[in-house]
Image (cartoon, rainbow, N blue to C red; front, side):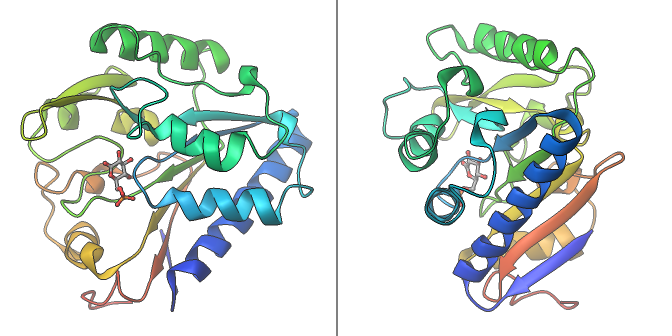
Amino acid sequence: MSLNVFKESNEAIEALAKVFVEKAKTAIAQNNKFSVALSGGSSPKKLYDVLANNYAEAIDWTKVYFFFGDERYVAHDHADSNYLLAKNGLFDALPINENQIFKVDTSLDPASAALEYQRSICAFFDNKTSFDLIILGLGDDAHTASIFPNTALIWIDEELVKEVYLEDKKVYRISFTAPLINQAKEIAFLTFGANKADAIKAVLEGEKDVEQYPAQLIKPVNGNLSWFVDEAAVSKLEKK
Ligand SMILES: O=C1O[C@H](COP(=O)(O)O)[C@@H](O)[C@H](O)[C@H]1O
């Protein structure tokens, strides 16, 4: 595990953008394609801007295949949609075709949407599922993707994608499970801001308690795990 700490969040985002581009170049050179799963929430917005504005010519974007580590169970044009954020920031700004974008079909019921997304992932990878890069965020409560504290999703070990109902928010989400995430070649957390300091401390230095801190589940089987954070986010860590 590598912890990359930057003074400002913008520097952490720039560094992750460089890793994205490096991994894409390597994967495209080796396999003629690059598979990446994007995170949800607000943190990736600036990353999309940096990739679209500074790296438009750096890689062959027609060979990049996009997935979503989690998605809100809303229509694709809903303001909460993770797909919509990526569409506005990235897909519309770069030469990316519809067939390169794997979005969750939220017109299906939640369980069918999860099953169908799993099916399309397995088909893309010909059942040997291993993303070149999975980008994750971290919630203030130490959730990642939509693996929230005290939810059944924490204990899933068979399925790759699963629906989850969040009782407090009264919403469904569709999420990658930890076993799927942990198969990735590269996993990168992008997390910044003082409001993440307790969660990062619990995940990296707290006692093992995946029920409370689901991001502790993220341990790549054969790949690499790295964190891109700002100083504020790690201000409570003992070892930096
Ligand atoms: O709900 C979510 O939150 C986390 C963190 O989001 P952020 O807004 O603090 O960036 C995110 O990683 C996850 O994908 C998302 O659905």
